[in-house]
Structure formats: structure tokens, C-alpha cells
Amino acid sequence: QVQLVESGGGLVQTGGSLRLSCAASGLTFRRYAMGWYRQAPGKERELVAEISSRGSTYYADSVKGRFTISRDNAKNMVYLQMNGLKPEDTAVYYCAARLGAQPDNWGQGTQVTVSS
Image (cartoon, rainbow, N blue to C red; front, side):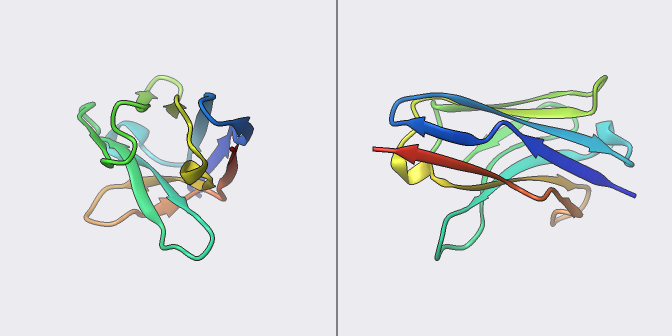
């Protein structure tokens, strides 16, 4: 079965950096668009960044210039480098795999907390 396992979350001060990783298994990874979503308490889950099967990227306006998404098809991995973190980036971050219009598979999430 498909598994997406996130890692790399934690507690960081404002302005700090974190790198999230997502290990994928059970799917033909190179065919999928891979995304990072986040959900803060009391808010809806939102798309943060996505990388297509061909390497094209999308970023939410709130993270442009601070976050970078990348993938390694040889290792079935997707990454989110987060720099210049702000308290409003605090959320649970989820990895998602998408073939169609909506994500097909989700990871369990990793907590990112940015202290002010």
C-alpha cells in the first residue's frame, strides 16, 4: 500500500530554518505530483507548495521566496526547505501525492512550531 512518511518537524525560533522530508513507498513516485500542505489550529488545510512530475513548482503567496520544494525520484523523496520561518508558519505539515485533481494519498503529518 502507499505510504508517505514525513520527518524533520520541530520547534524553531522566528527567522530559523527547517527541512521537511517525505519518504514515499508503494507508488510509482515519478508519475505523481507531490505537495506539502499545512493545517494550523482552527484553520483549514492549505496547499503550501507542490512539485509536478516534471519538476514544475507552485508556492502559496505566503511562502514564496522563503520555502523551496524539491524531489529526488531516485530515492522516492520530496523535501521542503523552510527559511525565514514566522510564527504564522506554525502548523502540522502534511505530504501528499496527487495524480488527478485532488491528492490521492496523505502522510501522517509533522508538527512545525515557530516561537516568537
